[in-house]
Length: 316
Ligand SMILES: Cc1cc2nc3c(=O)[nH]c(=O)nc-3n(C[C@H](O)[C@H](O)[C@H](O)COP(=O)(O)OP(=O)(O)OC[C@H]3O[C@@H](n4cnc5c(N)ncnc54)[C@H](O)[C@@H]3O)c2cc1C
Image 1 (cartoon, helix red, strand yellow):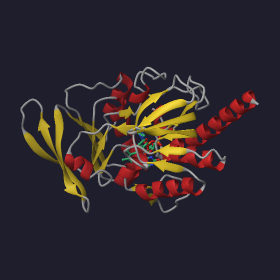
Image 2 (cartoon, helix red, strand yellow; image 1 turned 120 degrees about the horizontal axis):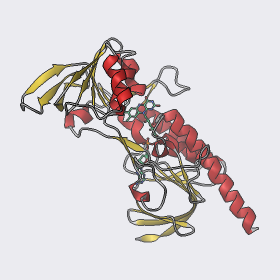
Image 3 (tube, protein in one colour; image 1 turned 180 degrees about the vertical axis):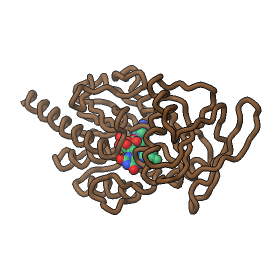
């Protein structure tokens, strides 16, 4: 283990929330350290065009946008550590963190570790992510005008994604591995009443067909009853099987909701532990957008700055 290093503010995560928190904290002279995790730049690094982030009228590629976020935070003195946080102890002051072989302490901590869309785990799915495979209808639905897409899943997320996609797509097929849905009654009814939505029951996606140049051309579906595998033509695949917030590190230390999202005081980014703040998708199961993540990252930096100022005032 390397000797302990102390920082006034440590930010866990380098997605839109973490990098925006870093930008604001750096401009407030707090010399923040961002621990970037194993996905520097966050979820947007696995997508292609981002067309709904204000300020880019022609759109921008996700990885390029996150490179700009990092550069802007670095310009004001943010330091990045390209490691995973493997341990945190929020019961001591300063807070103690371990990032692989490095031990660090911080007076204030901003958690922006995000969430990960649940995927099927197929090689073809990750190869075509952003090229016809998506985990976000709000983000990518617009690209599927008059196309036929499938939505994988049977819960509320899948029904919501499917209903939203009918604004653009000519046809939306929900592919579900069972013969009944898990979604709430109202969401089921809404999807079933929608003329553009149809259902394929007892099917799992075995492979996504297509190339990055052509996009998705279809999927191989397995009938879970007969075992038969057959090709199904479509222009895109949306995953609607939920998200997992990256909060395993905080179990038992911070309050989580039933789905594992960090809980914050309404209208702020404060957790129940003074000096620990949460921003972005890790505490937001509803909006899950880059702009909302960035907005709450800004709030977290301001909350952290006020907290540190109050500590200084008390000790003066
Ligand atoms: C395919 C796809 C396309 C999308 N397209 C759009 C779009 O067009 N427009 C839009 O607004 N939104 C889009 N989104 C949603 C958007 O990406 C998220 O809302 C946003 O990235 C959330 O930002 P965040 O900073 O909260 O977390 P994330 O972007 O999830 O970043 C989390 C960060 O935490 C780090 N981390 C996690 N665990 C640890 C740890 N233990 N130690 C250190 N670091 C850790 C990760 O490495 C990562 O850097 C898309 C999402 C996906 C998956």
